[in-house]
Length: 211
Image 1 (cartoon, rainbow, N blue to C red):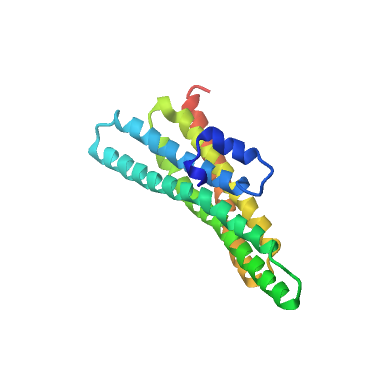
Image 2: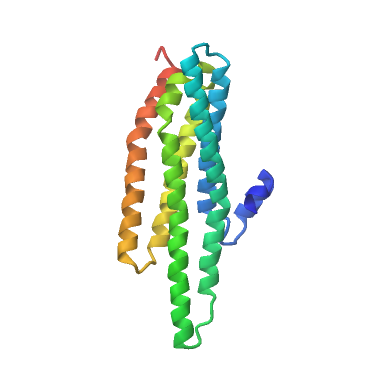
């Protein structure tokens, strides 16, 4: 499993001229890192808070981000496994019409799964985005730069996953499925784009309050 590799070994494997791991797995990992950073900054900020309601809110969001980080880590391997199945389908025999038809069906099925995994990455990272406003307003100054890193990682994860959704849908024949997935993925990417500049500006103001 990719997630059981050391960081060095994962990077080395990412650099190989093999189909997996690729951008999809990297996007999932990036999203997991974003959620983990948010959990960390909230844990640090908790030590500085006295208000019971604020403490409880921070704990709750940290718990949710921990859950999201764990889900996204699982998608690192799921993405690689899904694309490996697509590649296996392309290698199926095609000596006669029966084999060709079976091969076509397996390729289409594989592509559907391969597009759903990065969409799931997008869904989970969008949920991380839902917490940024709270996090920016409730973390201590010493970790606001980490919130900025988490924001950029979340943006990269969403865009990277979106690219993988698009490339897998490109070769699908099921137009209804394609439209449904494209519509959802596009809504998520537009949501993220609408929030990114707003959150960055808030972070910049925290970093440079006198600017």
